[in-house]
Image 1 (tube, rainbow, N blue to C red):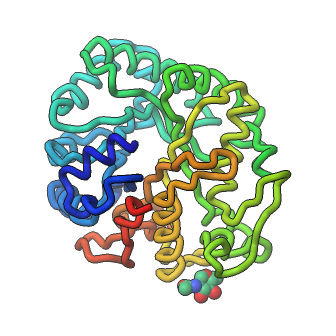
Image 2: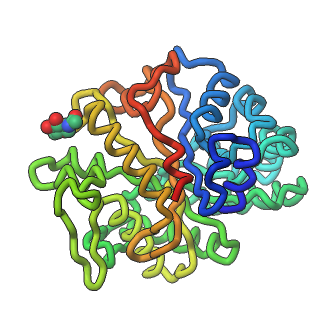
Length: 346
Ligand SMILES: *[C@@H]1O[C@H](CO)[C@@H](O)[C@H](O)[C@H]1NC(C)=O
């Protein structure tokens, strides 16, 4: 990531002031909406704001074309609907790579291909590892072995998440997570994990501290600290990340790293704590926190890479908070201001 950040810095005046300790910030570019700007406008907006990476939930050739020459790092997801075929049919994986990666690879800085999003545990879980294997073989055959293959999971893979040191995969998730971790670890490819303190807070606002969920307690807003053996946690973001690290260690995958592929807070939609002010606080605190390079108590000094969910409010998502995770309105005005450059000034 340091190298990626340096490379981006050459392209972005916004980042030139801090060449040391550069740590970028990504966004999720979701498109479940009827009114979004054209991809070239969206990519220009990302660059203008100092965003360094984007995650796409599915391949879209118009978006990939707009990413050409942008210098942005790209995480490219597969549709969950394609997992079974990617897993069972190597020629389908090969044509997927030929259609969506190969034509763009010279000009788009692909970082990871993510086979599926949040399907473990569940009916599609058994397809994830074979899909990853077929995609990896297809990328290698196309001369694109530098694009690494992983998957994105939600924290529903955890059976135990508290305290963080006791983190463990559930019995339902372990049969998938163990082999996936064994695939990723020797390749030094991170697992992607979606981290949402918001849902923990909104499910039980009476007993979960809002300051702890919003990463406000360690910046002097309150004194909520969770002690866990020798470690102490000032925010839930770190506690969730470390619970997944503990689960991976327990499953035998010690060296495996995590990338936070989604994290965010809704600015409306009726849920507890869903407001512009809280969303602004959460996202700006996360950007600053990951930019500090402090890491988490379990991985001190190991910068956490994170992708904010999401770029836009998406009007064709289910009603309620789901439509209100965007940092930008579809007309590209800010729902609230985010200082993305805080991610690169340590
Ligand atoms: C954050 O959410 C809490 C709980 O719903 C609410 O009382 C508070 O006003 C919100 N803060 C801001 C700044 O919007």
